Structures are given as structure tokens and as C-alpha cells.
Image (tube, rainbow, N blue to C red; front, side, top):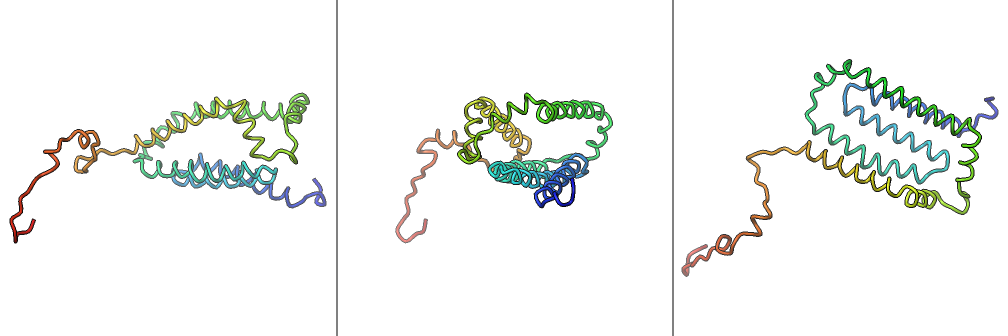
Length: 209
């Protein structure tokens, strides 16, 4: 690419892309889990910048509001509330290293196949070009909602159930039962009788309660 064809959008793309890659590497390589969550939030912000560059501002705002405002904050609270033994966690790193490398290899193979199908394959490029609606008549929110709630509605509901299970799991993991804490028991309050909760006291004139 020559310097005269290098515009501001290309420069911002390379800046955001480098930041996303660097943040992703720091997420898996940081020694502190809280630092990993902060790098994950930084990666989300830069990915939102990439979405803005390609004209998908709806996805950019969704990424910031949903992932940064909810998911990443949930990760941060869970990491801070769990009592993680970092020494024990690092001790088993070499034990699970072959499995991690195998998963990474499979992931890179899938990404390579996806890039081949979308960039090199002419038939895949033709199919994608036909599926994209007219940008002047259809907004981003309408196009995403039309695909998400028609063709992928069951997968969308399944993703919601997975997030619900994850939220319940985080609550169960951080729940602490202490005997010195008074807890409200709704069933005991509802089932009590009048004579157990009301006491009639006769106060004589001139005396306090």
C-alpha cells in the first residue's frame, strides 16, 4: 500500500487491530485474573472501534453495553469474590498445556478455513454478497433482528439459557453460609399464627408501655 492511498480509516484499523490482538494475548498471559478482565474490557472497546469503522455502529454499541457493561463486570465481580489459590493454579499449568495447545490448533484451523471460505472461495463470496441487504433501505438493527429472530431464534434462546446457568453458577460459587447471620424465612413468616406474632398487653393508666 502506497503512502498516498493510506487514509485515516486504514490507520485507525491497524491501531484497533493491534490493540485487540495485544489485549487478547495479555488476557491469557496475565498472572493476575483481575488484570485479565481489564485487558478483556480493553479488547472489547477496540473491537467496538473496528465495528464502527465498517459501519456496524449497532454492533459496536451492543458490544460496549452488553459485554463491557454486564458480562465483563460480572467476570470482574466473580474473580474478586472467589478465593482463588494462584499458586495451586500455576502449578497445574504444564499439566494442561498439551490440551490447551491442541484446542488452540483446532481453533486456528477453523479460523483458517473460515478465512479461506470468505476471502478465497468465489462461491462463498458470491453467497455473502447476495445475503447482504441494501444499506440505504435497511438499518443495522433491522438487518440483525431479521436474521437473529427468524433463522437463529432457537440458538439465541439457547444462548440466553447458557447465560442464565452461568449467572446461577456464579451466585452459587460466591454464596457463603454463616451461622451468625439472620436470614429471612418466608415460609415460616407466612405459616405463623396470630397468637405467635401478636401479644396483648394491658397497660395501666400512668404507666408506659
